[in-house]
Image 1 (cartoon, rainbow, N blue to C red):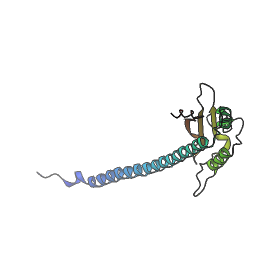
Image 2: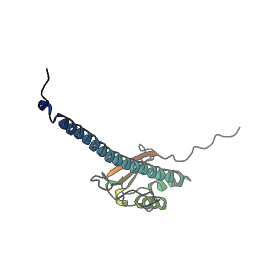
Image 3: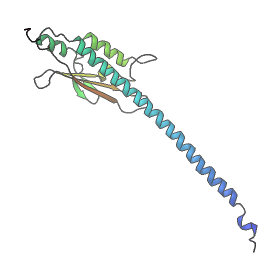
Length: 174
């Protein structure tokens, strides 16, 4: 028994349209995934740059503090403090005048080909906290803030380190 052909007429056309629809959705998904991947790569680059800049300042602090005496050490360490009050990249207070910190702040905000800076990273959005109290153990907290293009929120990276003061005197020679 043969079935009439007219019951199946146009079925191939429907199959082709469904296949094209599924293929189109797959392509659109891949395009969206590519855009998300580009955004994540850019964010990762900015975070890496912020971590490198914070580490650079921490190294400069360790190398440039005056270790002649405890008083000189604590005073020179406190000179690095910048914008000590505020939260969430909305900092205020006294700006640092320490030359290494001022040069670092300029590097953070300088952006362009071959420059290490971060987008929309102004001096007022950076914070260097120094805790020289007995319980603070010469704690240095560096917060680097920036705002990527097409981003509504400020991003931040915080590095916490401790700076050793005077080295203990060497043991007496026998």
